[in-house]
Image (tube, rainbow, N blue to C red; front, side, top):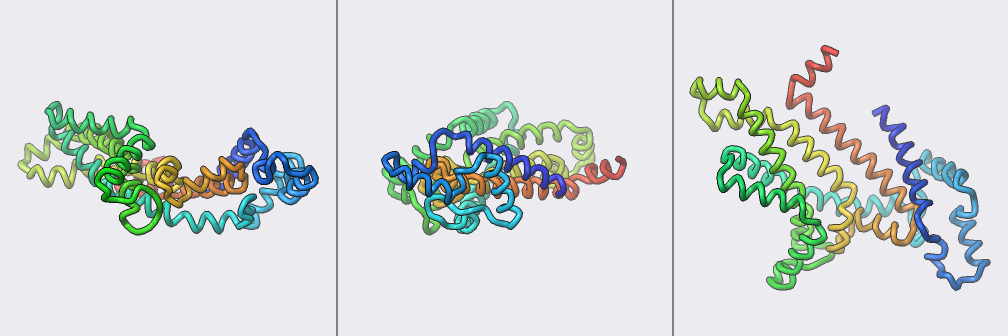
Length: 302
């Protein structure tokens, strides 16, 4: 938790520098190139763009220390207010995607491991690699074409009831599903080769009990790691998925901020995203202690 302080400071410095290095002028984007010089200069003073970059950075840090993220250049609304409005939509999308990816990915990984070198294993491996390899903007457009335009089962874009959630959640879940299937297969195969599994089988313990009580438990740490990383990245905003399907979340919000050179929006989304990602990883680290006592004992030994 203490390391979070220098981490957030480094993120603010890096993001601020990169945002200012973006080509284009946010003031000209707001008023147009034909605006009067007096109007341009007035807006520069209002948003603090007339100061040098060091003064601008210290001014932004002062805002952060007061718990503020500034105001959007375009809407003049508090950035934190807009983020809090859009975050529930991103959370809903991330949870829906993980509800699809986690059970299916782990199940396919187990089946693939127990059917090693069979046709089933090859088919699942091929589908997993496909899910990992195909870009989400392509798979999203294909799902939209088939389920929205051809079958007319789900709306093609927008936010609303559960029907609007299905296609973006399915699109977002495909890479995580493929990754979970691959890591589960690899980990389960490693566990199955361990001596205690052979001993359990020699003792006549039922295979179902071996799978649930020994194989799954020992394979959980890398699986939980992948779940935590994917969930953290989804909560930061699935930019492509939300943009394609017009989902009003953090990803689409930060994309609009980048296009418009709305620096407070970019900075606010990145800082909140960093905090969320670090928090998710802290939860995963704490889960390690519960899942594997060896982690706890190792810390005590050190």
